[in-house]
Image (cartoon, rainbow, N blue to C red; front, side, top):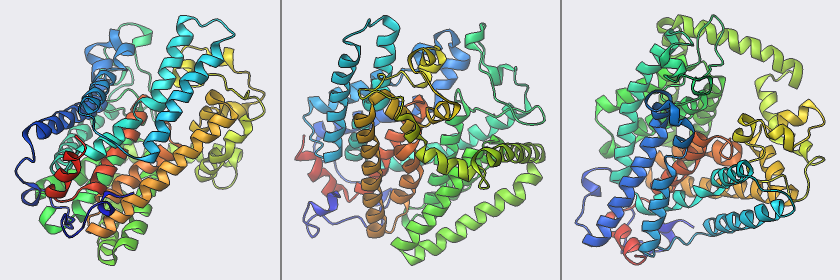
Length: 488
């Protein structure tokens, strides 16, 4: 339920403009409580920074510690949990409680799965890593939704806009460099420390940006697009300075044009469609503005992109055509869209080979694939099942079992629907597009994205779900202080 329905609206009025700056300033409601809140917010910002720049540490600064650095965010997330628990902050949300019950049940299930067999060190590491990818970050979303205010959100939006411009410069250099150049392959000395790029037609690379894979750059680019549109459509009094508005749209546009990622283009197109539909429903005026901004963005990429980046455009077009021919032969006349529809239901192919209790957390994830243990644990009957295991819902079935896996998929669907209702109601109530735009970005990740397989997407999914909650729950400081002070 939205926090707006829990308090007297006459006494604690909603900040309908969701205005940053002067309307968000107030005296602290309690020095100790505000210090606690700010400390948690700073730690969340640190987690976000590590999400963006973890790849810099793993690829260039400390490549010999690449695997341990994969978990560099986790101690700070754990510290956030300790601080919140130490203040006895109550996060009363039914889905959070369900998520915590899932995490406890998964621990019991893991013990049961390995009770009759030998639990060696590698199996234990895979199980712990799998549990982390499934459940560790879920509470963080609700904490962000409770602790962030409008000023915090504004700082994150502006910081992301500036980073997007630097990221754009980096991907341009990466695209123009050799696949084996340090800026693409990293500074490691051994084969395990060198990052291989899938490449693009013409001998070009698919840029990774500051991440260790193109999935990270895709998530960053699409999130920056959603943020840029929200900044341009924000109410007049809360709109950012023109410099930030230009940077906000320029950075992700360049990243998108040079990324060579079909997923980035399709994801962006999905965001634009969902944004127009939701904003038009919330307000006819904001819907018309969204249509104008969207049209300008599409024009910028379709016209300016090929002129400024002709090689990137030609290479991407060749890749789209080649991959489209293969997908048409495999999935039907819809090409990539037929493939996307097929992957929504292909987890059903795994029912016949999955035991009731599943194969265990981590057995079907990226770590198991890297360590070459997945093929030893799971015996696939045909290639279609191998492909189904690459989808996140398929992975949920294999690792958690038929019953528990289906329940977890239903949990993800319920979370996405719940978040959609909150975000759309907040946008309709306030006239600010930020809650809905943050939702349309994160909805794919929460619903059936690779959040249980890819560490970067896992962080993006639950962190931006929290930012969406924070934007939806953002009200005047008086009301927010009341809500926190009664819980601390």
